[in-house]
Image 1 (cartoon, rainbow, N blue to C red):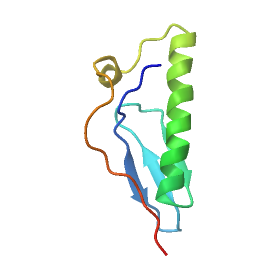
Image 2 (cartoon, one colour):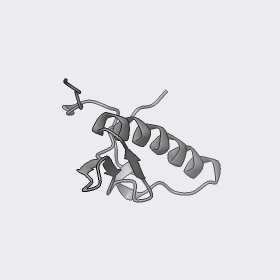
Image 3 (tube, rainbow, N blue to C red):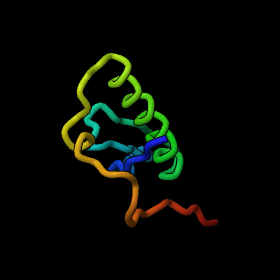
Image 4 (cartoon, one colour):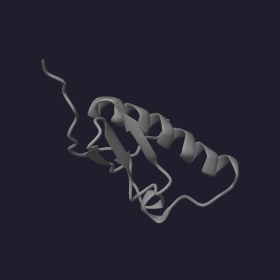
Length: 81
């Protein structure tokens, strides 16, 4: 199984919740009640979008074609009470 690091942008919404988007995968737009939920949903949607590219023989967006296997630093959301 191949893994890539996909850059996503998390934005707090004024009406509560969080929006996740990605310049590397332009069709990725998800929303969650928390930042962690938005990231989790974004992972699932990104996987399905990329699988769809492969299934239909479409070329991946340029940023994803040039990716190397996952390695590096990432920030993860940690909920605290």
